[in-house]
Image (cartoon, rainbow, N blue to C red; front, side, top):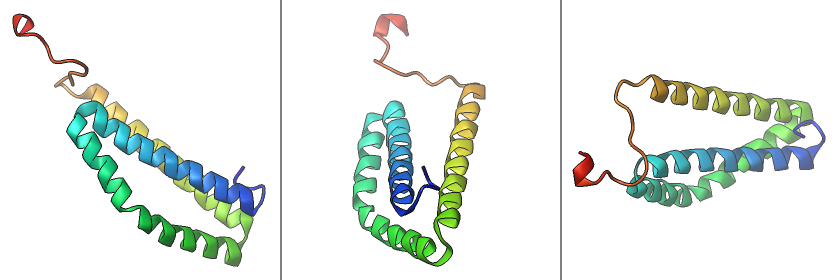
Length: 109
């Protein structure tokens, strides 16, 4: 989709932003609900920065064309995927297992 034209690049950029926000907030919320809500508030507070990033992306699109802008988006997507895989593999290899879900009852401790 990133190489199909200016509209495709904009849609791909929006999908990448949504994926990153969902990953950050979802991971934080899964570990600690307060941290998840805090991450959501921080993301909401930084939304004006997305306008700056959008302007940079439009400048790349206008100056270098669809191929360069689409390639940059694909590169960023790969970097996000590699970072996510690295984080998940670190969590899995951790010797201290993370307890998710409802807290254990006193009789189970």
